Image (tube, one colour):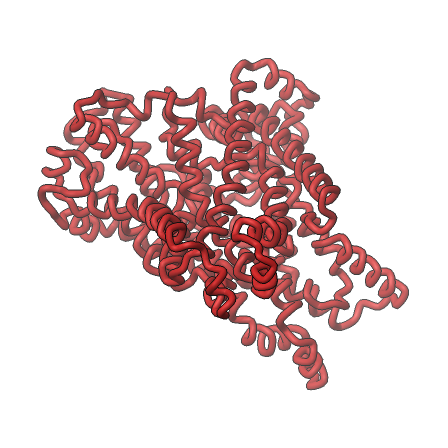
Length: 326
Length: 310
């Protein structure tokens, strides 16, 4: 959805407005897409009204419907729900976790897959490259639930492989799900394990699409492999890297609930290093029935995410006008 | 699409431009290591699932169990009323969701791909806004449960994930770039309306994108657990998909571990044993692991279209 395209659309519309005709074609296409539009209204736009939860003290009125309870019965409280948030001691920690993990994930998520994608396209054996690419793509297709069982097989206190190894070597076993020290590294490792294959494949697709004659003329000019990478591959990868980067920056306030809740088995001892915004929102809603704070955090998450996405897009476009998302 | 044929240049000059043999060996070793690292956990869990309970009790989880047993799979086969039912639930949700998703995404994608469509601008805006901003979990949850009454229904696991901006954009891009206008014009000359043109002329030649989005949807539904966790409660076991069975087993075990008064022999016996849980994991993973290598090129195709065009 580049700006040019949007402008072109706008142009077409004005032309058609002059015609002031809703043709049979338009009618047919509207009917055809009606169910999807209904879906978008029902599942993307109606929930937007739920934002007012953040500004109300939601109370259920017995015998009356949800709409009455929310709109009429519940009192407006202004920004009080947010007020509480910033005074609660957990919140700073939750924001710190969310941002710190996401920044680390973002840095690793760009550098590691790009480096690996460049390396794998250099392998002499095409077959080996294909097999390895297929293998590292696997975790992308697994759910966090399944991954949490994999992790458990290694980290379980009495039966896990790692503790078995530690015991055989004569060391003292670790209570993995109670010791918060290693978890920042574990979570980073597990997240990288699950996601690098997917990003690598995306970058690979771009690299293999690069015109080979560019490299051939570079070789004639005596360029080394490293110079070719720096001078041809990386610049041509820049647009796709920018897009992946913008999307990730836009998601910097949201985390993978599965990773932080399921993989850590919702362990209370780990909460200092595993509680992120999404985990907090889920727990406030489902375990404590605290609609107000939960929706206040949700709203902050949405607003910050939206602003960051727009800012990141602007910044990337200033550096490189061709690379924006929209 | 990945083009492996281009991965190693075939011209003479290209051969000259290969990395040095030593570097190649190092890179190869690195990638073999990474491949093992990603595949080993799956193999490990498979080995646990075919170990005997006795061997696990003695040695813990091990790559080399002292005794093998198919007991876990036999038990799963025999507990058809629960595990079998949830297996069928997963399959049913996946099939219905994928078909619904394909209908929703292809129709809007097609409408948006028509250059003269009057509502194109409006619909494009409609697609962009949810990408930037959403109501958040509480709003979505309350609307879905209180207004649409989706709690404890199959629909709660099907409807919310059926469509997304990304899928529609991939569809639109495909129709725009691949379907020649002449085909649609020829349909119009023959007097067909858009509905017939779409179903009889456009869809039959759009199999690549249908396969791509169909696969995205299939894998998403098969792997989905969050909506089950939000919208199903524990007295509606008959609705559980497999992924949620895995969650609820965990929940029950940690509940019992926390509340020792429940921690009695008889209640423990109702819980699937270690090997059985790993066997359920394998029932979830094996269909994926066996099928994705054949489908991955469609994924790569979809990812690149989607990523490039936003």
